[in-house]
Each structure stands twice: as C-alpha cells, then as structure tokens.
Amino acid sequence: MTRKAQAPDVFDVVVVGAGHAGCEAAHVAARLGARTLLLTINLDTIAKMSCNPAIGGLAKGQLVREIDALGGLMGIVTDRTGIQFRMLNRGRGPAVHSPRAQADRWLYSRTMKLLLEEQANLWLRQASVCGLLVEGGRCVGVRDTVGVEHRGRCVVLTTGTFLNGMVHLGEQQTPAGRAGEPPALGISDDLRRLGFEVGRLTTNTPPRLHGGTIDYSVLTPQYGDDPPRPFSFSTAAIQRPSIPCHMAHTNERTHEIVRASAHRSAEMSGRAVGAVPRYCPSIEAKVVRFPEKTSHQLFLEPEGEHTHEVYANGLFNTLPPEVQVAMVRSIRGLEQCDIVRFGYGIAYDFVPPYQVKPSLETKRLPGLFLAGQINGTSGYEEAAAQGLMAGINAALVGGASVPREAFVLGRSEAYIGVLIDDLVTLSPREPYRMFTSRAEYRLLLRHDNADRRLMPHARRLGLCEDALWAALQAKERAIRETLDYIIHRHHDGLPLARWLRRPGVTFAALEAMDPPLAERVAQAVGGTSPSRERLLQEAIEQVEIEVKYEGYIARQGIEVERLRRTESRRIPDAFDYAALPELSAEARDKLAQLRPATLGQASRIAGVSPADVALLMVHVERAVAKNRLP
Image 1 (spheres, rainbow, N blue to C red):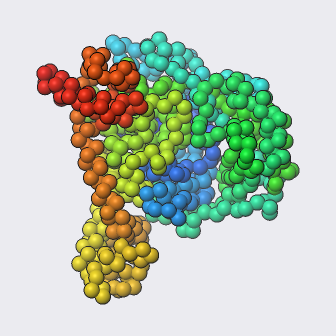
Image 2 (cartoon, one colour):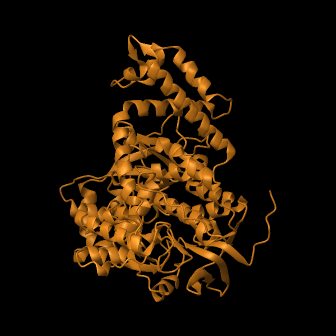
Image 3 (cartoon, rainbow, N blue to C red):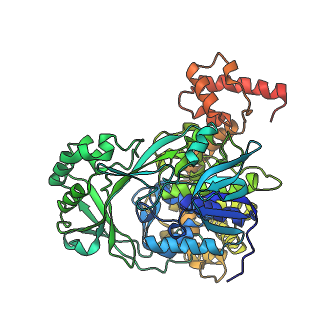
C-alpha cells in the first residue's frame, strides 16, 4: 500500500456525503489533482445501495457507460461486484439498448470504499455536517456537529435523502436519513438564510424478504446474459457468478388488502409531505389509481452472493408493518415469506435546481456545488453522473488556484448533458428520472459508443489513462479501415456495405460472403491484450450500426448542427428580462427566475414560446454589441 501524505489544513475541494454522487465527485476531483476531503456520517455506508441492488437499466445504463468513459468509478465497481448482467431492449433498435446489472450490495460498498481509500489526493473522514462556512460571499467550507471546521476552496453538497430526512412507516414517523441512520440537520436552515429556495420530496422503498422462505418453484426465473457484457471500457471480461432473479405477481387478494389499508399509508394519507416519484409509484398508489388492473408484476432480486436477503422490486410502500406482512403473504410463492426489513417512505429537503448553473455551481453562492438528490433527481446513476460533473468542475473552477473554464456537456454529446440541462432549465418539482425518450438525439447517444463520444474529453482533462486511450485508438482504426474495405469491396456486383444495409444481413453474413474480411478487421485492431477480443467485437458492432442506420444518423447530425447555433449564443449573466415588455409575462418571469445560459436553454423552458426566443435573440445581440459582452 502506498503511504498517503498528511491531510492539509485547507483542502481544494470538500465533498459532503458519500453516496453515489459524493463518491464520484471526490474521486474525480482527486484524480484531477485537487486535494479533496470526503465527509460522511458513517464510513461503513459509503456507496450504500439504499434502494434496489442494481446499476443501470433503461437510459440509466447509458449514464453509467458515460460516467466510465469520463473516468468515473460506477462501471468499474459494478463489473467487480455484479451478480447478473443483462442487456435490456435487445429486440428494439440500438438507440434504446441499455445495460443493467444486479450487484452484491455489501460488496459494492466495500469495493467503492477501498478504491476511494487508495486514491491519491483524497482523504476520508467520518463527520456529520450541520452548516456552511461563508466568507466574502463565497462558500469556504463546512462545520460539523462537534464544532470542527473543514475548510476548502469550494464545497460539493451530495446529501441524498439526509437533509431533514423523515422516515415514514404507516402512522409512525422517525427523523432519519434512511432507516437506522440519523438525518443531516442545519444545512437546510443555512441554505434558506443564504436566500436559497428549499423544497420537499418523498421516495419509497419495498420490503426485503428472506429468500429461504420463498417458494421459487412456482415463480418464473430470469437469467442474465451469457456471456455478460461489462459496463466499464477497462474491463476485459466479467469474472463473477451469475444469480437469477424471479418474477412474481400481485393478485386481487393483494389489492383488497392494500385498498382496505390505503388510509393508513403515509403517502396516501398525506403524512409524508413532498412530491413522490411519478415513474416509480408505490403499490398503494398503483392499486388505488388503476383499479382496473388485477395484477402487477414484481421482480424478486437477490441482494448478494453471501446473503439470503431479497429485494421485492415493485412493492414500494409506506404501509404499516402488519399490512405489509399480509400483503406479501397474499402473493403466490410468498405465502410463508418472512420480511426481514419493512418497506418505508422517506421525505427530505432538496434545492430546486434552477438555482444551479450548468456546471452545478450554485448561482447565489460561488464555491458551492450541488449534486444528486439535493437537485431533485432519483436513482443512483443520475446522482453519480451529477457527482462526476460537479467534482470535475469543483476541481477546475472552484478548487483551482487558477480557475479553468467549466466543463459542460451538451444535449447532443451525452445523456449526462441532457440530464443536467433538464435540471437547470425545467427545474422539476418531483423526483427526476432519466429516460431514453428525454434524449432527442438518442441514436447518437448510444451506450455502445460512449467511449468514442466522451473519452476525448477525458483525455483532454487528464482522466483517460494511456492504455485506455490506446485501446480506443485501435478500435477507431479498425472501424475506419473496415468501413473503407466494405464500401469498396464488391460481392455479386454490389459493395459489401450495400449488402449489410439490407434487413436481416449481419456482419457475420458479410464475412461468409468475403472470407478475407474477418482477417482484415483482426489486423486493424492489432495487439495481443486481454481486451483484444472485446475490441474486435465492439469495432464490428460500430461498423454494423453506422452502415444500417446511416441515413438516420446523418439526419440527427444535421439537427445537432442546428442546435449548436442557438447553444453557442450566450446570454449575459446580468441580462435584464424585465426591460423587455414585448415578451409574454410568463416568459419574463420564467427567464428571470431560471436565467438560462444560452438561447438554446431559453428555448427549452416551459412557457417560453418560439416567438419569445426570436425576440430575445434580437435583444441579446443588441446587448452584446452595445456592451461588448461575449
């Protein structure tokens, strides 16, 4: 083990919270050379999977691969701790293929902690933060509950569900950040005193079951892919056991129990204050709102390789314990089931994200960055993506003695760009979740090309190691040479590329038509590394997609260029929207509140019409010309 240097008295970056956002923020800031401190209430719960033991999924898998391409940890840790890997949406087009993995909950946390402990420039401390340190109109650190000040050039808040957290279980309510852990008190009060708007959200978890009391013989198993596809571009192959999940279903008896007790639900009764996730509803909400449905599908997901605990995905609820027992035992296969942890709801504070810049630094308080659920999102992947970007920008902008330009991804570059742009322009008032439908350029933003899209950024920032960069260059060379070969090589009078464009014709079929093709691709990849076979298959995949979807990709490319023209015109920070009476009243109010950075962002704000944007463009150009602003 390499000996670490003594911690400095003043850090470059202080990260509060060691959930999925905090881990990525601290790790990437330290990799960029910033002396970084990671503070957490409990060092034993770093990167704890508070909800389901899974990483990835529809659109979320794309986020994880983008995090990996930019030098993050989530993909690497998932590959080392996964117990089942599946590619979702295989029956549809490549734009919506999404990787997902079940993970060993305990091992994921331990693996992440060890990687953070081994990272140079990063120090971990156990402390409960209760306030912000502000000097000269800038955030310069935090204060913990025992009075210790942790000072830094900037602070990244990634507090998850801990801000004034309140756990709801039926009629019971207990102050907690999650079950069994204390909430973070005091930070919300400081934020309000500093002029921030603070709101309230709620989310739910399902019960955990003892797998030994489940009758799997009457349930439908769901197996992982063989062979599994890794998340991380640095993983040559997955070397982990595969454990199946099982599907179960609620029934009319289950729904009767839920309906009879819905008034005791913390969510349905209104005791749990705060907007709930629209796309991850509780079982009581589903039963009450969709009375015509006689059954709902459940996924019983193992929590790890060395535990019998099972996560009952689909039974999110805030019902009393005795109701949960009756509800679970009404389900076929679970008649004798024991609940080892009851489901519950948690209400917590968040900061509506119109108050942050695209860099995730707050507009009101320089030096303070927000990432994860504090910005109103739900999901590990959304949190980790924000943490990565906040950590990069904290190191570049807030924590550097000579600040550099903020790193911001556009909507046409990454799902991460879509996520953050949605947050700062739409400022959702309910938990935000990423979907493929939110990305208008999803054919360009596939999971399979995240390295090609984003590793050049990582290399420029210093976050892409030589071996990974060399592998990407080998893959790019193989793609170029293979495309050139099949465009100019003919079979029965037609170029091989024309054959590949036909429905049902695969690259393997081309190799059968033209035997030298396989050798040409292999030669183009070159090398003898353990990742060679993977690079070969990925290069072939890219060629097949580019040829088959050439027309669609070209059209989206034209749309991206059109978008860039509006995104490139910045709106001065001090622009006075009130001085434009020609704008609609709603547009003036929304623009003044959200203060978009560009005309492109302004065009995506609800209530701002195309006519408002056209008018705004004229006045912005005049203001820029008059004041010589950029």
